[in-house]
Length: 266
Image (cartoon, rainbow, N blue to C red; front, side, top):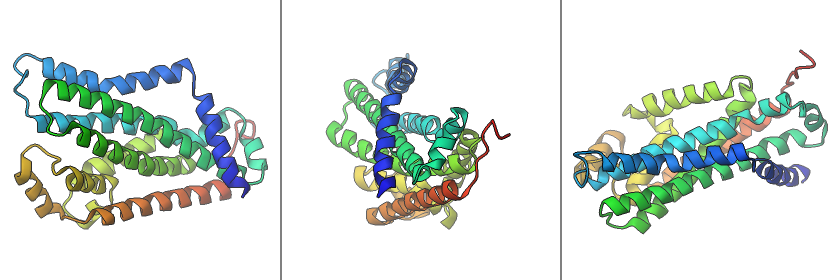
């Protein structure tokens, strides 16, 4: 099918086009940010050798998670707006399957770029924590975190790509609002609505695969399971896959059926 080939060609083109000095510099800053913050925290007076390793590992999750969300906001939400600003939308819309190819290709490119950033950030962060604290199994920590952030990139990338097609003028702002409402507020509610968030399922996978997530050890995990439940990993993965597929489906429908107004037309 033309749009499938076009999606991979668009992804390849976007990746080549992103190899600019500015993009590389931004990526390098995001990669280094978590490990630098971890190093500064551990080097602070009164903290050296006193911080539990569980706290350090939780900081990796928070800092790399912040970098992952930020990178996807930067590279996934402008999927339509960037083409309108570059005055290339008319050409894309006139090609058979051009809209779908552009949407999916930019989605793949943003997921790939964001995962490379998050994976590199996880690698450096685990190395830093392993130097200042005795991590029981650093290889397992690194591998599990890499898988979790890969899943996060895939799902959040689909959500932000969908948002970019619906709110193409304010996609990044709406994306930030979604994260604040859904993953900061709603995900903390021990109710059914909290289980509809991406963060809940990623947290459940982290607990199932790593055996910890919050400082406090087994007691904290038991308390979490008491309030939020303990679903099987296959259930979490299924829910995340459905979220991704639904968002990509909605985004594809919107980008095919909607008429976007270019600057020349307005």
